[in-house]
Amino acid sequence: MSLAVVNETTVTTFVEDRKAFENCVEECFEMLDVDGDRVLSRSELREGFCKIMSLGHGSREEEKIDHLFNTIFNRFDEDRNGNIDPREFRCLIRELMFAMGRGFGNSPVLVVLEIDSLLMKAVEHEFGRI
Image (tube, rainbow, N blue to C red; front, side, top):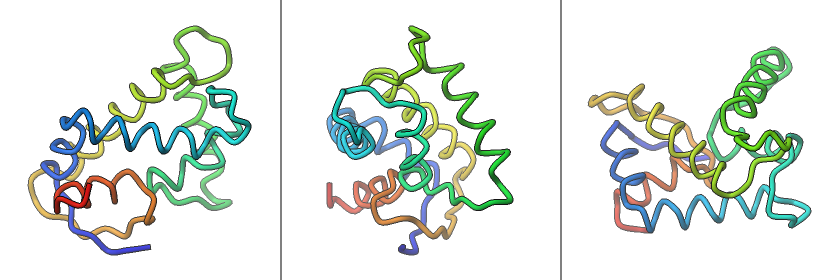
């Protein structure tokens, strides 16, 4: 884990850099796609999603996390096949990153991030490391 200062610009600049963002999203997708079938099952997404999005997890939050994954599949599994494909995943991550950026606003916010999280990638992008 690492401490970082982020704001809306940190996130939106990263997402709007299409090449950098899509490369990072593809890396995340491949990391989550444990069986290599180019789609993410509910269990594959759940296993790694909290880490890449720096959401945290714990037994007290299980009901909220279940609701989150139900919402994700209802919203982003466009073909209703029970899996998230790379395009659906990219749309999901883009929307979530913009939402987090709006949540940060323009004021700098100190956050603790997983090293492999997309927010950490946004911070690295801001400092020209990606």
